[in-house]
Image (cartoon, rainbow, N blue to C red; front, side):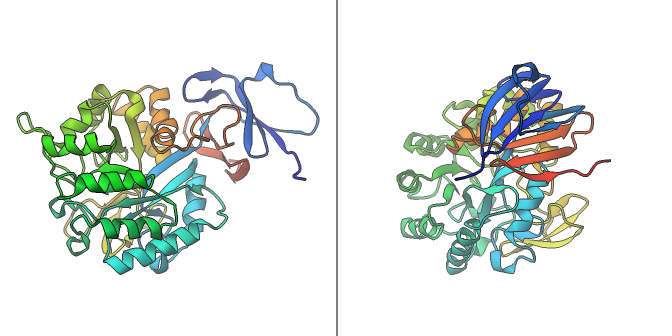
Length: 395
């Protein structure tokens, strides 16, 4: 029989994120949350492990559903990565992230399939930090005109047979695929993805109004990194960014590194979308947490210097800014409240991808928690599935 371990985490305040609770505490038993509330509601029973943090606040563990790598691991080139997925899992836990979707870019057909099988296999291992909760496929059925850092040779027309192979190579872990709505057979692809339980996400696209609405009507309900990998907003030619902003059926991703999107565009997205439809992502590469140098995203080489990730042609290629830093840009630039900004990296991605057991502080949910220093926002402690996977050294 499994030993019962009860832990109480007490901080200045909780962000649940539906509400803020002053002088709050979270009681966990093994891998689940038992109770959430003010500290006065809890009795200090014997055998209770109490963790008290002064000048600190607690949130649900962050969820990064679009992240290519970190700590020297690249999800698109598992066997070529200098570090294993465990390095990425550990680093993310040090930054308050408890769940992530390793994100794969387009590569030659057999290379992509082999890598997906390898990625699915390493994700099955017991990881030391954040939980690898699903695979994000960013391609290969995208528009080469908006490919970003992806290699043009690896981008292909919609092929339903290939799509099935990709999903099956992921061994049930593929949760989302980016596609361009203007491609021939795009609606058939949407239907196929939904059949497999994969969320169709529109992106890397020059789709017009008709093409975008056709994809949404077919069931596409997500937009990959809004404003990036698509034409700018235009006052007469309505396309993917304008439709994604104004159609309530669509949830939008925002890269929240402070570089990919002008703060006023973040504010625009906040004004157009209900806050529940905003999902903050890092779009990090394997260079996150690593020194300046040359790295890769699948077959593409990138150069990283002082936080900027670029191809040899000077195209932005992901980022090195993780969610613990990025979510504050939603408040600073987008004028979201603290609760709204926290929702974008916790309950919103959980709801978008049906991670029904995480993303909020409530009884029966997974014990996924992150504690931060109040003045500096420095991560102090991370709990993933009931296990303390990171604790900062005392200053």
